[in-house]
Image (cartoon, rainbow, N blue to C red; front, side):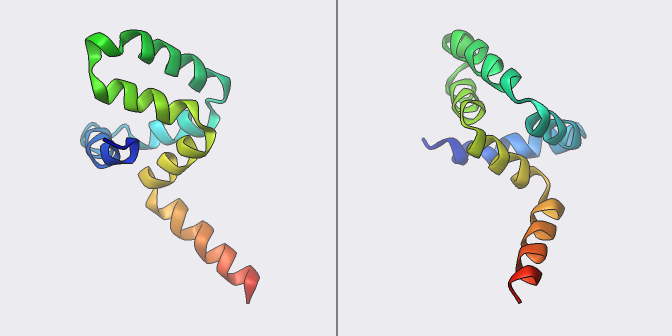
Length: 89
């Protein structure tokens, strides 16, 4: 299963508990802490399951981390696309 296949489930859980904004903040500002979190998840993945390993793979890649943060915050994604589209006009 691809890492992005887990995103809808993770996003739903974060939104249900109203933690999506906090998650976006931590993902965007995490930097090296994201790598440490990924390593901790890899260590715990035999006990936590495949979803934890997928989250670790997401946290390992800064591109995937930013993409997931954009996925969680659709308004930010729409603003960046409209800003980019306005600059090209």
